[in-house]
Structures are given as C-alpha cells and as structure tokens.
Length: 460
Image (cartoon, rainbow, N blue to C red; front, side):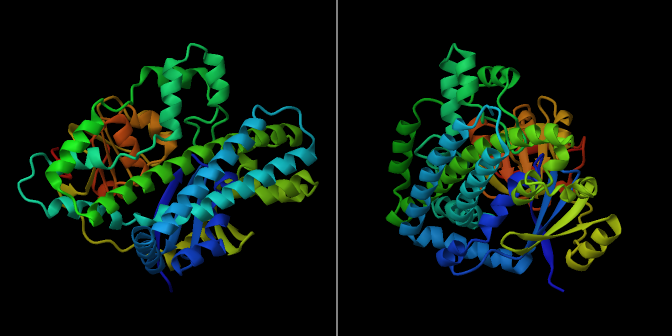
C-alpha cells in the first residue's frame, strides 16, 4: 500500500474556499511546467475548520524537487508565473471589490459570482503551485544557506545577511495596506478598501477591532536597509549565480504573499454568500462551508438533498479526489480510521530524551519562554505575550497569536513559508523546518530559541 504523510495543515478554514485551490492543483498546466503531475492526495476535514492534507510521500518529494529545479533554472517560467499572478491578483481584487459588501442578490447573480470566484482561484492555484512546492522540503533554503556556508570569517552572523538579502523587492499587499491604514484618519474608508485584510479563510470582512490592532502594531522595516544591503554585497562578493539565487528567493516570497493576500478577498465574498444562503435555507452557515462550490450551486438550483448528512461531513470526513471536479466522501470514525491506518505510516523513531532541536533560521534573534503548541485558531488564546509559538506550520488564522509570541518554531517549511514571511514582517525570531518540534515539545516546556544558530533547547 502506498504511504501518505501529512504535508500541510490548514486551520480555521473551510472546504468551500480551499476546494477550488485543490481543483487548480490538478490543472494540466502544472505538468507542462515541471513534467510531473501534482502528487496523489486526500484530505481530512475535522469540525469543518481543520483540513489535514495528506500526499503520497514519494511523489511529494519528487514533485517538490522538480519544482525547486524549475524555478532555479528556468527564468522564463518564473517570470511568467510572476506576471500571471500579478494579473490574476488585479482581477481578483476588482471582482471582490465589486461584490463586497453584498447587495440583495438573486440566485442567478450569486451563481455567477461563485463561478467567477472559483475560476480565479483555480487559475491562481494552477499558476502558483510550482512556487508553493519549491521549498516545501527546504531545498531552496538549503541552497541559499550554502552561499554563506562557503564564506569564511564573516563579519556578521549568517542570519543577519539572510535578513537583509532575502526581503522581496516589492512590498506585499498586506504591508502596503498596513502602511496606508496607519496614515489614514478615515476608518470607514480603509475598512471598505481593505475588507480582505487579515481575514484568512473564514473572515467576513475587516472590523473595527482588527483595524485598531493593526494601527497599534508596528511592522515596518528599519530604515537604511538598502544601504546595509550595499555594504553586505561589497563584503560577500557574490557570484552571478549566487546573486541570481537570492533574486529567485525574493521573487518566490513576493509571489506567495501576493497569492495569499488576493485569495483572502475571494474568501470574504464567498463567506458572505454562505451567510446569505444559510439565512435563506435556514441551515447553519458552518455546514454550508463543508460543501464544494459546485455543490453549493446545486443547492441554490434546488437540489437540497445534498444537505442531508452534511452535519456528519462537517464533524469529520475524508475527501478523496476522483477527478477534476469529483470527490469521494467518507464519514464515520470507523471507516475513516480504517482508511487512514492502511495509508498513513504511523511508525516514528524514538524521540524520548531529545533536549535540542535544529532547523533553519527564518528571522534572527533569541527568545526564552514557555512553549505553546498551536494546531488551529482555537488554540490562539493559549498564547500569551512572551510565549513560544510551536506549530506544524502557520497560516493567516494564527496571526493574533503570532503577534504576541516571542518566537515561532515550525515542523514544516523553509524560509519562504508563511511563518518565515510573517516573522520578518514582525521582526520575531523564527526557526522553521525542525520536522519534529510538535512531537518533542509540550505545552509549558521552558525553551530557549536561538534563531541566530537555528537551535531550540529544552530548559525545563
């Protein structure tokens, strides 16, 4: 039996929003780009808000390697991905802005909006998947780190060079929005303009409380970065190939941020449609979120039998792709456990006694505090100011906790991951790609995070 592993955990999410991304992942375009289809996969939905994404282990590693090779060696491909993503992003924001806030809509109009949103998300996923997978196992990260490893007697710690040389040349849409919000004196205007900001998968639109938090929290980079960069480049004497690799890294971060920001706008529109239909159908909105877009459209057209058993699907289910738009749904704990036991390799090496972990530095610095394991936004309240946030990976839904944490530690990802990007924006020490942090650390463990050396020590 082919073995699958947990590649990603999307938290505080909804199936209706992420399903279109999965459909885009199976686009023929991806095989044209790297010569390999997206790995076989399935997903576990838990209480409608957590999606555990499993992929064929062997295929996932091969696919990630091919993606890394493609973005490093094929300038034309990376340029086309960037240009297409920028174009799609503009279309997304225009479409979302025209449909938020929702007016009183007829069913036919709702269907048109849902289909337009779905097509845009599918295209964003298809064009962005090579970038998304290129550093899943840290292959690009390792190449970047080798640049500094080849140089002796560096004046600064490696993390210092990494921080200065890997910032994207363009600010993310979130960063630009933050800048304008802090300058604006008209809350109503920015609430409407940036309704998508910090909304993740299930937000319904930026609210006054979130706006106040943005104004109070500073994320701007320190001044003089360009001058520091010139000094560093003079010291390092980078080869043309090394400069190219660092530029590629910057482009990857920029593209991933742009995709993440723009998709949030579509999520907000879809979520407001779900609320509207829930009121009309007298069904809880959370259950409608467990449908695919096409299923929701079928319900709008009168096929309400689809709603039968939806509570069980929301509670826990497996969703297995059969074709581009067709899924097999398994509900019921016994059936689910039988399916998982046959496919998931639960054997793990002995981890007892480990007191020190290593990973990749995403943002330098040191912190000491209590570990808090966060597996979803339902755990955000566990994190108090000065705690160490530990997670498989992070997503926009964890931002409230991330803004309080003294450091981030993740199992998955490289220095282009969400945790790494946010750590640089917040200037919070961060170590990614530890592989086993969530298996070793426990809530309340006193840990020291040395994000200058990439080491986490368990003190007590």
